[in-house]
Length: 284
Image (cartoon, rainbow, N blue to C red):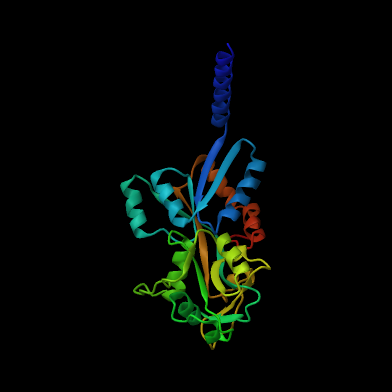
């Protein structure tokens, strides 16, 4: 009798859970680690104002999010890069129609430990560091210590953007790659933590991840240009040389609950959250 009663209770609980789930407008969001905190902030505020809705946000990288959209396992893909032609082709084969929406702007911060005396670098010096042509801080005015290069993993939109725009200087025929000695880390937070504890490390991530535990490098296009720190005003006025758009992708023009959430993202309230999380809004 006890087993039978327990089985009935479990069955009723499962039925109630399934019913509750049907009552909710559930949206699955996946992708860019740069955008995960921003996206979670959107989701929290949106569900607070729309209690019958549920938004689940996970990271994994821009490539992971776009793959999930193509395979139909998420409703929205967060991406800190534009979708690639080969991804579009694969999506069409699978019956998916990626629809691009710009939701914010970001400056990529290049960071070192606060104890590192180096505080400014040109984009050429950054390219030399991250490709392994420069390997000691003394070559850059620092101490005689080996540089520890940190990078995001290859499925990260941040990794792709940094490679294409810093290492390859936006040259579509560029072949430069990250140094074979670079440590590939799984998230922006992992890079932030490593830099905070390693006085020889240098890494990069969206400026929303910076804190007093890391020092942002002032970057110049060349030695004759102004050295500029990653800050909202410098991304807006175009002075900071390493900045990029942030996107969400949906399967076709969004409809239903997905459209409602995207409309919230682009609303004044949603764009205020962009500012509050240290990104740059696309709408005022």
